[in-house]
Image 1 (cartoon, one colour):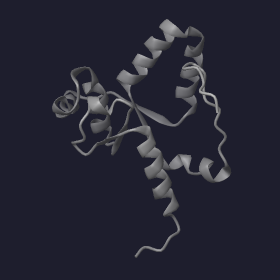
Image 2 (spheres, helix red, strand yellow):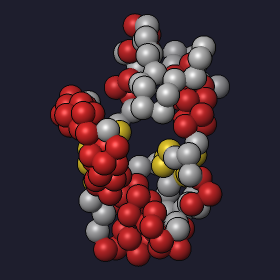
Image 3 (cartoon, one colour):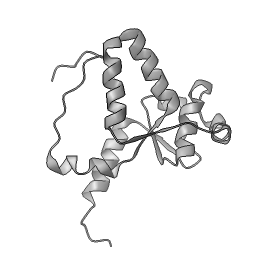
Image 4 (spheres, one colour):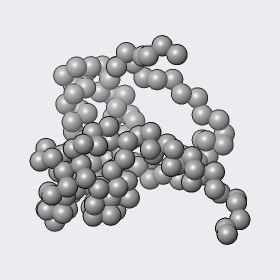
Length: 135
């Protein structure tokens, strides 16, 4: 498959067995990340801003604004500019923070920092265990 341009969405088709499992994940978006995407789209791809806003309305996500306490808990575990991201993960009760920038974070405060590939691999193993007898 040819690699798409950075701004081109990757077409993905979901079979029924995968589509039904999407609801097993509760997506939390840090408010800082949502604002960063809005700024970047406005500057680089303004025609995509309405699509992003539609995505936020259509997909079951929670946008989380971290408290000062959340930020204090995250301060020692993230690069300074990324504290709001980890703080949102901590404050929302997320168990995973999924990022390509794993070097900017350390796991802690109940949040494990993983790459997208790790999330997919672990979700596949977790979902594959449904229906198996527990031993």
